[in-house]
Length: 423
Image (cartoon, rainbow, N blue to C red; front, side, top):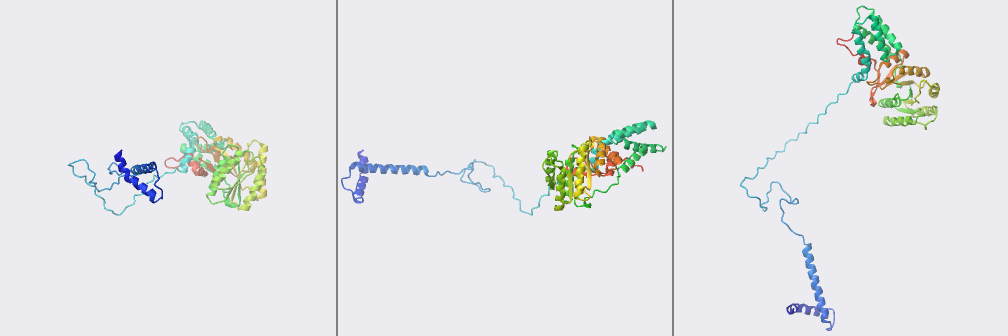
């Protein structure tokens, strides 16, 4: 202890001299106060030393396993010893000399072969083909007597949804062919094909929307036949031809019909006219006629309520709507299209007859022509009522609303035997 006090004596003298000379204190400063100051100074020195040691960054030798150590390819670090080995150093891979870069060939995309319209019609009319041609081949190849053949053929034609009158007209053609002793199965089928083709050749004005501006189309039909969907597809088709189209929601008795038609209008990018549900359909049509004239619309398509063809009072409402069109725009409607469901069979002929008598239908759109439907109803409507089939629906896509082609229709049903048909 005495040696420590002796070691600290110079520091004591220095502190005492500092207090007396610099601060002007007297000799009366107590010994205890001096030692306290000296102790505080030592504690401060120890604290600073410890702090410096703790805060000083640690240096370490980099290793190859350290992910933070940069690795330079082709440079060996001789300062880092590795395992002794007599094996020669690994040979470096030769570097390719830079040359002209050749762009890789573009990926070859598999061409999607779109199914032809004829193939699609064949698939949709497969039931008609089996019902008509398949059974016809069985009858003609069975060696039946002439009268039995006529009776069996009549049954085949009627069950193919051709209708009674159309079936009788076709049987007369077959009978005339049988009267020729040289006629066989091929000649009879050729005669049927020729007769059905003549029935489908209805003399009617072409569907030409440029004949008037605006060209007004009134669309009618019972509920559930695909009326709203057909209108939307027809609007898209006309818009693709750069025509300005307006859709009119005159089916005000069913709120969902207005909403569905508005959705189709948005998809096709057409103008849209509507009123509140349960409004007067004639008022909607009146506003639409005025709006189409002021906007310079090319085509106006009017949706109407789905009427049961047996309800006389509802049919009168449609007549009123048609009168409003003609009053506000001379010649309107320029086309009255009836939507017919192909799956309803011969009932479609009765619907067409009633609508035609009340409204003067000018054309047919046949919907839902798929593998479950019999396309014979087309022949019955064309033959009995003289109405042309304007469009047919063969699928769910917008482009599946196609113009009706009688030759393709006949080809899809009858096909073509080897060597061609005999004419």
